Image (cartoon, rainbow, N blue to C red; front, side, top):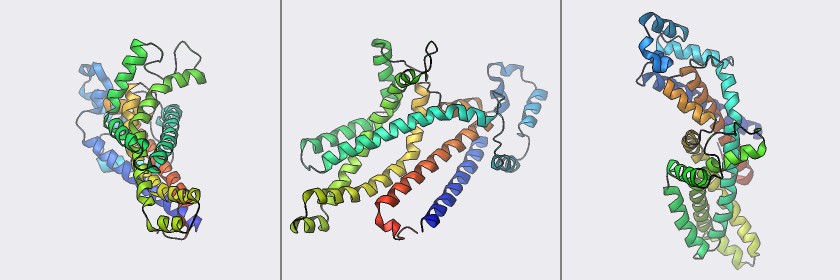
Length: 322
């Protein structure tokens, strides 16, 4: 049963990655701009017809687009993501250099958001009409309405420019040793921006889920039969966590989209900043590799969320999920 369930998730993940790669490849080539001109950057005036043809031939840009995609997909399945047209290095090496920074930012922010949402949402949902209840509703609307780039600029102006207590960009100090404390100092602001712009709406969702679950008939019956309040609340929280986990899974892709903005704003050397740079320079091999790798992270994250839902929801374990 478990093996069959996991197998379905793996097949679905592969299909999602294929769709991502297909749409990304064709949309990328449909975008305006010339990759050969972008390759030369500020020296585009030096590009002649012969050199442009050489660049197109070197990166197979002179072939029909369906042949380009087929060739790229074939090489990707062999583990070869090609070479960056700007850096001249293997795309896989560049991605692995940036991946630890994105993983660090994602793991710290998402774990903090989930933990904070559980604490705030549970406290507010279990006490309808209390100060916690009303306060969280106001806070969630306020924080979710603030654009991440605006909050990031505010943080830089306050903590870096005015107070000078936190670095404004990068992942480590060029004068430091790049140790744990140095990385944490650089992580504080980008992580805080992502946490503050997401934790309110996540907590609000859990809060409303708990309220809805508390009004169900089985809760009234359990209390009428003298079931301990602690056990009643445990059951309510367990059932309310199922739609909450589902909501987390649905919002993970948009979370990665928001992290791209934050990484670019704080020059956090991760996959998000790499993707933006690849778009600007029309570095097709690097952009495709970055999008595919990010898509893989999203698929893996969704798989972990599904595993958590499988563990919490008995209906899934009994074959309710087809």
